[in-house]
Each structure stands twice: as structure tokens, then as C-alpha cells.
Image (tube, rainbow, N blue to C red; front, side, top):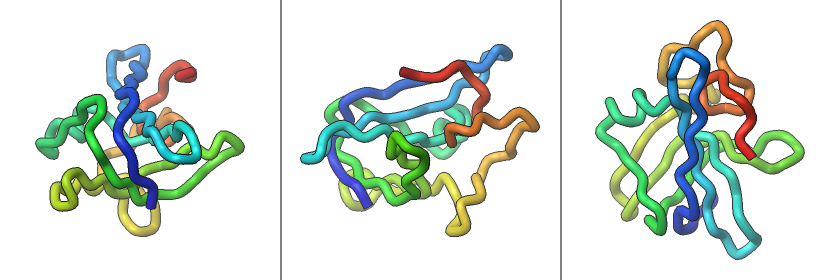
Length: 111
């Protein structure tokens, strides 16, 4: 689990306009990027994110950059968003061209 305030809420749009959501958290070890999922899935779950909001993320660290693919996000210790099942399978319907960065949307790299 990793916790910290949200430094940035970052989106990446595919060519067909579908948007994937990422966060960057401030942690004692430095900034950490977190891949969440499609914006529509998050919105349909009645969830949202603001800069400086404190969150806790459970997920898997992937790749050489140490990005986290979030399984669950918790705000205020009680408001849960479940993005992936325990085996890592996304809870949203995946497109054939699902982006390998973990947010569920095929988009240009976010830097």
C-alpha cells in the first residue's frame, strides 16, 4: 500500500476520445505515478479526485519506472473505489487495444 496527497490528476485520451486517469502522489520517497482506469468507469462509480486530497492505494508495482496499477483507492479511510479484482483483472470492459500502462485506455505516453 502507498499513501499520500495527490500531486496531479493526469488524463490521457485515446484517438476516439476515451479518457484514462492517472494520479501522481507525493510520498516521502518522492513522486509515484498511479494508473487508475477509464474516466467513465471512475465517474460511474461516483468517484472523483482533487489535487492535495489524501489517498491510499493498493495495487501492483509494474515496469522499471515503479508505476502502480491501482486495485483499490481509499479516501478518508472509508470511501473505497475498487478498480481491479484480486487477480488484477480490470472491473471495466476492456477494449481490444487496451493500453499497456494500466489505465485501460490506449493513448500517447504521459510524461
